[in-house]
Image (cartoon, rainbow, N blue to C red; front, side):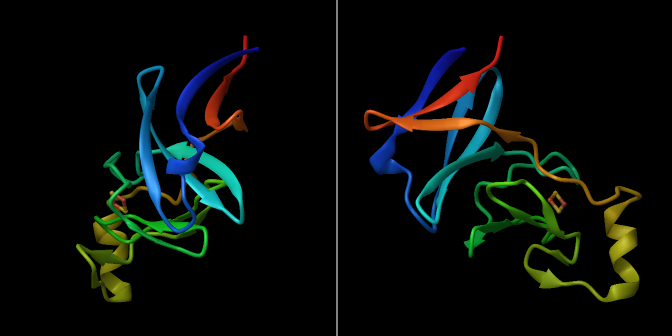
Length: 123
Ligand code: FES
């Protein structure tokens, strides 16, 4: 199993996210309850970057339309409920979703060792 170095451990902090590049993908690294997690920096709604979203309680909220995701499992917790931070009335949410159904973020396996975070790449 190969490893790709993504970041220094000390730069991945609780309540924050940072981005890293790996194999052509943009990743979000975060530390949740001491554990480093990695998900793709790409919202499954329109494929826009998530990294500038609000981070709270191990989740990130998409800055574009408010979908919220678990930073470790990638699970979708809320789907399209705002535009640029302004809440949408319930009736309009499916219009803004434009037929896209709730979907999780792609997650990546990472390991922390010797002061660095590595992506585990399977053969
Ligand atoms: S692009 Fe993320 S919710 Fe629309």
